[in-house]
Length: 475
Image (cartoon, rainbow, N blue to C red; front, side, top):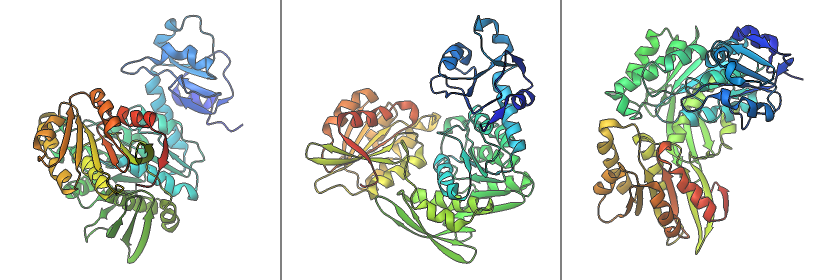
């Protein structure tokens, strides 16, 4: 049996107290009692809404071989009999375990942050590096104060490449996370108006993103988007943090990893990257110029982590969009097929414009329409009215004929759109669903985009429930 952690190592790393007869080791770590696997340890983390200690019994029933619990919660566990490691605080113990995982690992570690594109870049790195060794990366968007230490604690000792996504809503959130991860390469994909309600300016957002450089190991690298106005600010921050090597990517002629040319299509794209005197042709199995820009960051990070970039580039050709981030479905409806583009995971002004460009480049069948179904962008604060109304211009430029909107903030876009565009507006997402499912027709290309908290993913689910189809890479 190959253990992720032996129980003795767990005890030492977390400064825990054993209760009962502990197993020799564990094969995994979970904080979800519903999906825990046999032989895994259940960490009973207390979150904002639920306390994992309340689900310890369910975790055991579902196969957990060990519980990690808080000393203060022992009385609340009642007569529960199970092997346990008792700690002062479960989250703090997981942080200590994550740091121990980093200490024991010889992996090349890459950390990614950015207002737009960090999850896609992380997944492209996972995909591109997989042929070169054992890759460990966060699942979903485990990029916060518990997701990062959980991902670290799950990293096997034999990992060759560790890839970590680090997110933030406020200043001083990235700093402690990057110091846990201690990356060899830190990537900033972008700075855009995400969480703008929590910051006074884009420069403040950039400064918060720049915290990632504070964890870079001695002799490490910073990879920064050279096309954004905040490049200079980020470059200075990286230097101030002691990063030895600072690199840029983008379309700028000064970029070290340069986008020389881009050819987009509905189902994929090709870019030509200028790197150190050579030009690489890079085929990507996902559409969009923004994906091509992310690919430059991937190539840069992979090369700086010691990977063979020719093999990484070859792997990117089979990269596919993910659920909520451009995954396409071909659905059979009355009158033929429609294409559904699922961009429902999250949204800010920059990613909205990228999704609108995806819809622009998608080709409806004869007689079909380009339909944008858009929900509110959250955390825009006092800028909400302005940034929602500003989406009108890219929608017009993209030639989108139909715009269906849901959410109180999308009323600002409704009022800004010209009369030649067919607009349907509902204040509540639930009220738009039946209209959308009934009104879409064969030949249409439908794109759904919103912030996750709006619930617009339910629109995608309603389409998939109503019409037979399958995930597709064709428009």
